[in-house]
Length: 142
Image 1 (cartoon, rainbow, N blue to C red):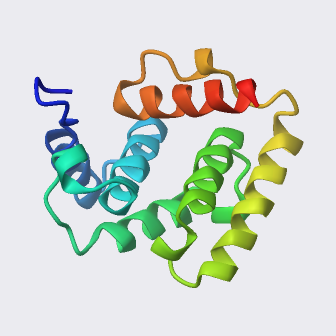
Image 2: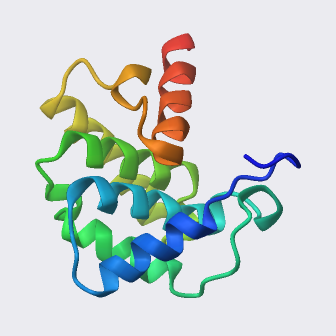
């Protein structure tokens, strides 16, 4: 965050999106880019410091497909994508469909990793990690 309390996500988003568009793919960058694309509608620009990108939803969906969507064998992807879809299902398309997908993804994630995810699973992983470590702390407190 900068001194005004704004996140500085735009530089990472631009860098990761450019690499994605050039065909560079790795799991960690794809997870981070999934998060950054989602942040275009998850939080307002005065919080994220991001400029509008009309391609953000399509990029999120492309990364979702890259991980094989609901059929993914990657528990972490299913956990974070399910959480994103749960929080803002209408940002991904049909609200009822994505709310249902969110539930299925969270269930599949737990099938693959029954103990779920702790804050420690996300530590040291940039803004992506900070966000989902916070979410894991909130879930643990409930």
